[in-house]
Amino acid sequence: EAGVTQFPSHSVIEKGQTVTLRCDPISGHDNLYWYRRVMGKEIKFLLHFVKESKQDESGMPNNRFLAERTGGTYSTLKVQPAELEDSGVYFCASSPLTSGLGYEQFFGPGTRLTVL
Amino acid sequence: GNSVTQMEGPVTLSEEAFLTINCTYTATGYPSLFWYVQYPGEGLQLLLKATKADDKGSNKGFEATYRKETTSFHLEKGSVQVSDSAVYFCALSASNYQLIWGAGTKLIIKP
Image (tube, rainbow over all chains, first blue to last red; front, side, top):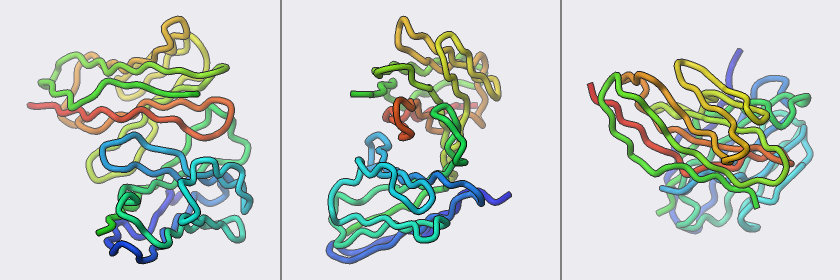
């Protein structure tokens, strides 16, 4: 069974440009999460999808970030325009719909975003 | 609010040494507690978890016990190997599904 995949693995862009990150969850996982780790700091929650609906987007830092999950399968996270402080590693995770609070979230390898 | 505090690294040990990485938490209600590990060049993967007080999670020789009285979930291993070199993250899940993370502890094991 394929794990969570993310694309690209690494992106380097100029300040002010737009970047779109993609996450493909494990097949059949209706819960999808985005997290990010800014250099040297703890991993922070960004948002949680259940199927195509945003269940919790309390961690989204500002309106330059837009997440979508059309059709309830893969998800994209767009940053527009990118700022220097957006640099970090963006992780995606998924879990089955029936999972409770103690259930494992399965993580992708992350996308390292560098904004110059 | 909910938070996780774990010891800062890097932690450098010799092979076969005893390992403890401290983790304490603040949470309302009864959170589930996790240790995730990130090996070099790889993604995060669950190492072990505990969902209620006094539960002990274990995997690959690592153990951690959910201590509600001390709000702790310290990670231990009796004899570390070079292959255990990685970054270890303590995390909790409380009333919603988001994971709250510690800052991560880099572990370096020297042969």
